[in-house]
Amino acid sequence: MLTEARYFKRENISLYVDVGANIGQTGYYLRQVGYNGRIESFEPISDVYEKLTATAANYEGWNTHRAAIGDTDGQTVIKVSQDRVSSSIRKATPVFERIHPKVGTVHEETVDVLTLDTILPRIAGPDDRIFLKLDCQGYERNVMAGITAWLPRIRAVRMEVAVTAVYEGEWTVPDAILWMRKRRFVLAEVESGWRHPKERRAMHFDLLFLNRRPKTGKPAAHKDSSADNSAE
Image (cartoon, rainbow, N blue to C red):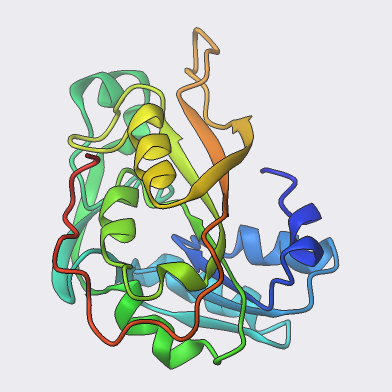
């Protein structure tokens, strides 16, 4: 996990939005390193969400939501993997299935999907400075496509991104860097994440971006119609 806590004070972070929270590992880490601001965690899978809520209940200011985050509001089907952490809305590639058998689907669940432009007005105050963390197993592109009006309010973003796609249609590292750079987010930190189980080469990196847009006022009232799911 990136040493992101060093940026909390520098960026005056008051709200941490944890997308793809799993059982609450990130929220627990935040409390251990002394972050006392609010945490809003999102996890769509039913049995995983139960464990998340049990963890969050031990700490003040940590709220949980059973939902996926994406580019449109509605519902979708998530493929629940044997190891749970590899569960995804996207289909795993044959290469990923071969090197990591626990990615295999054990069942599917229909889950609610919300965009960040929909959910942030409900959970963020007018003066909140937001840190966004994404660990969505290949769905990061969709999450970022669903935040346009509120993007200026995001002070920092940490996302797990593949070196070579292991889910069909997901971003790879160059795609994510280019997309973020076009929106005035600069890459500040890189750390290797999941590694090939035999070759030990990095398969994912955690990328941390900082918002370097000029300061703006309140979010726009409408969604940017030019936004799409492409990495441009």
